[in-house]
Image (cartoon, rainbow, N blue to C red; front, side, top):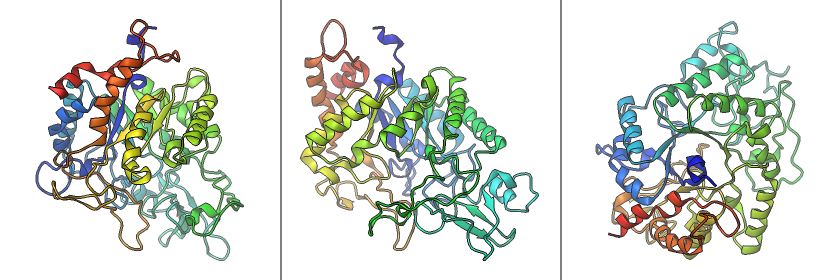
Length: 450
């Protein structure tokens, strides 16, 4: 096998950074791009191959950056476009890739597109969003529900119509059936790709297309009291519509205009539907996120079955991936316990495929709210009665709170993998290529142990 020909995203480890709480460089209490640049040697020493940045775009922060008011700039709380260019250059000089979080399903209600759209019925951008007449009694057009609870329709008194929002009312959904919307987002992608971005993680990719007839979602026969309210309905007409695969293919074509870039999709779907997002003849997402480990029962038999089912469902030549944590979920140590967190790291880094890591820093209290050595907090940024996404954040000054299971376990794992790897062929005993740069990185480990 020609290992030099293997795409970097097949042999690398992808590491998520939530910029707001990663590293503050100017003392305002908010992490920023200069802070990430400052920690580039730390990221290099971790042995990861790419950093995925959660949204850095201008935003009112109703949903912590996932409500974008300008796709073509950097929010001043994080820095400037010049800072971003410096970050990309520094990452590439360290042999690290940079992946941006793309949020194409919705904008902020303060985005100029939406401000125009709600101006009048005949505004050219009216059809850029999903507007609908009320029912005869003045209520919402159908029973679609927000992921955060309640109706997904918000009445606009100015134009006497409802607009659709799958998440917060401050996040109106774009109309992806409109070719002008698609081209606008594809131009956004090209803007950042030209600045050197190595790919995108596409937020809620399976949400982009909604039913053209606005039919009611059917009831969920398996719904149980105590579950999130939106689960009372099956999202048959609001997610995973057949036309979405055409959109994913178009996104892939944009990415393929640039050399050696990657398209990653956030998709919470059963495996049999998830793998469809690889596209016909692998013309879709390079890596549709596989979140199965996030909710799997933590026992060997259940995990073994999960792995077998996923591998069996993959299209021919599709490359697998595994996610063990992200900004929407509690830390893995909180879920499975500190000793099993090390086992989880071993699992993540030895399964066939691309691993995704997010480093929630370890301290004495895995579920605690304060790291005494750094004086920083691990918080759920959510107020009582708030419908916003609950995001557990890494510590703002991450390097000050030592003891990462990722760092220590990764270095131990190198020894295990090197003992397992056949010396001649560079492949595992199962015939799968190892990721020598991401698993061993001998030069980095030597530097780290020096």
